Image 1 (cartoon, helix red, strand yellow):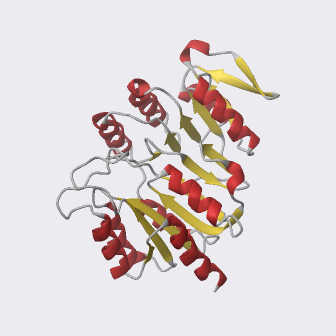
Image 2: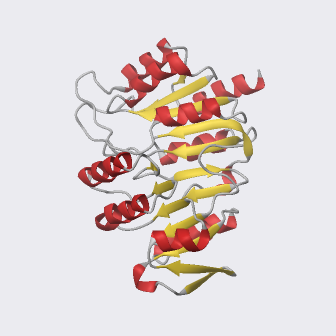
Length: 294
């Protein structure tokens, strides 16, 4: 099995006809994703040939769902249009919206996140500013390279796209059930906790890697949740041990103020509930390897 994304997922791409959308649509198709349509109001009714696969372009998400039964959308649109694209997906009640776009204003994310809640959370949002998610051998919704790992029984949830890729590669011989890049913005849709619970409930996931980073208190909250609800082994890594205080580092949410949000505070919180935390990504991979091979 997997979490959130399977071989049966029917995927549409908002912004498919743009350069980034088309590049990654091509890659997603090549990795076996069932892409059933694109959305672009200006090109509604057209058909696009993507390496021999003909994909219809629809004017709206609702039209795409009605015509194809789509249940996942991957959003590749510029930041100033992202809120409208996500709101449209939520209004159409699609099951999963994967927001790849970086640089989305935080108040925009807050608005569409709140709207999803008002609509009864029928639409799960992943992102924004994320690489998406992949269930190796089944489906790939986003920009994660499909050829760096294989199907397996490790679940991965990560704030960092690059560290997602590194962890998948380092444990490629063991493989992953699903890897989810949740994004590093101050407000995101799906959290570490959401993914931890989904992996806990997934019979085909045996252990979980959780990658966090400085800033905020998401990792501390995840640690408290693990203590109460997660029985599967969890291995962690926290990026940013050498980051200077008060400076935003890469991700918009990666900022430390005082002792709150430091890598050490997060590491301590996780280790206090029995999570083994590596000092480097490679050490984290070795800790997971010991669990899976032990």
